[in-house]
Length: 180
Image (cartoon, rainbow, N blue to C red; front, side):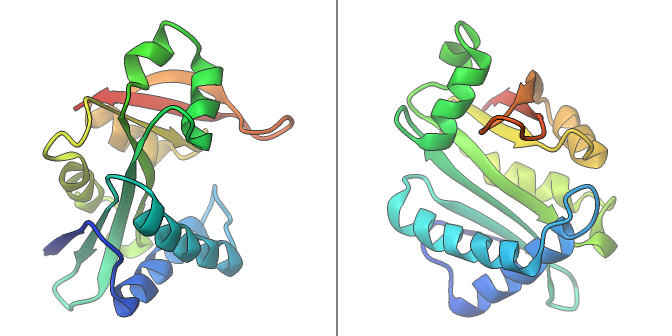
């Protein structure tokens, strides 16, 4: 397996393949994301590569050269929208412990369905968090995404809350943290 770490804007062909991986992974239950949402992922990569410190995109390729997984992270600091939403949800003293200046925000980790359960997620997770880009890392995970929850728990993540919402009435996600 070929694993690559990109710390700047990925090439157009890499981004197209990443969109396909994102869609294949997140179109399935429990996510049900659409092709339009996958295109929003591409916009997010562009924006984060340009504007966010600590941009990291990890991609994994199978023996046939096809991209089969991706992981995206940035550094989060006070004033960043998602980080501040998490701070409000977990409150002190947890917020002070996990959301330092900076913390690594794990934005996405996706593995195509036919490569799931083979250790690919663990591998790209470990490459993404290698080198201690920040003292801690934080992510959110769908409450019904049990394989993702098992992956993170198996890599040393701790549940900080199971009641994270960015807007009223939204499904409550888990927020997890890990020392790096």
